[in-house]
Length: 441
Image 1 (cartoon, helix red, strand yellow):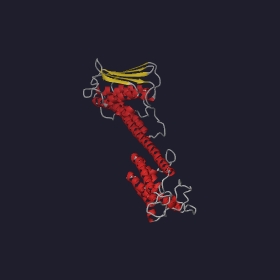
Image 2 (cartoon, rainbow, N blue to C red):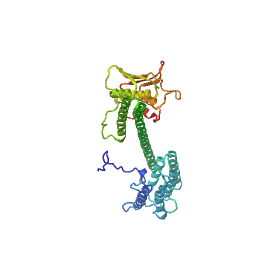
Image 3 (spheres, one colour):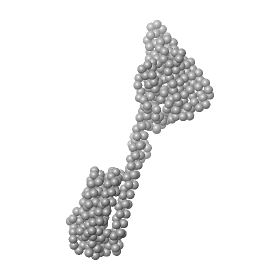
């Protein structure tokens, strides 16, 4: 048996950075910052340049006035990546700590290089985590403090490295502009990443909610289909079984007729139930092998009702024509459920049910009257039993109307108006279909 997936090959997507292990980015930055700082210390080609990209002379500066990396320098270079291990649990603390480490590195006049990269990642982590104010305000305050301190204790380029624990370069307009622009680029990029992540999360959440809603509606729609199928046929079986038991000794021939009706009703129930279960099992691979219930089966439905002892009078008016599957199924189920209610609730004695179906230009009207004692609505005046509620849901799901209640002259009336060109197909989930679960009438 083939094990290939039913919808084509599975595509493996590279995980997003948020899904990477927390140590991946710090490990990468540790390597980049150590070797990058060593390269900056040696000028990349034998020159002892230590200045930043904006320093006079360009190309990383041409002076020799930097402090060579020592144990503290390497410790500061590695401290930034190490602190990034905390960026997911405490992004604000991580940003503040890496900012202090980076400032100390620069104030010590160690070689410029990729040392600020960890600070950029910390800024992005804080923004993406939602701490936007802390990231923006902290970056602004930190830059102002750094430039102010550099101006206070800074030394000219030619005197750098001549001694002193702190010997940063005096800030210039070019340096301040470059660093501020770099910080703005990092923050704006972080905002874009945050908005994209939020949109992706919202899309995924909406898709998951839609899938759950459709699954729930489809499940409840199938439950109602099973109810309609079983309620009608089992009601007929129950009535005919009572007749057969009553007449078994007195009139065997009539009892035989009742048993034949039981056999036919049970066969019909099994056929329709298999169709519903088949639809539940299928996943769109094949089309149904049996036609969907509709008014085309009205004659068989009426014949089964008559065999159960009901007197059924049917009348169809208007231009009879094919209907949309949803409308056709709803009209058939409303007639079926109405006849089921008549057989169960109309009371003793001969009962006549009158089925009237009128095709209009834009709608079809289904009406079922009986002259029995009617369905008791004393416990629930709204008629929220499974049968009546299910009929109302079918009609309203298609944009139609539904009324059910006792007739003024006695008996019960069900009337539904269904638009001919509205509503979803029966294999599509409808919002009203999932409004109620099945329960006994």
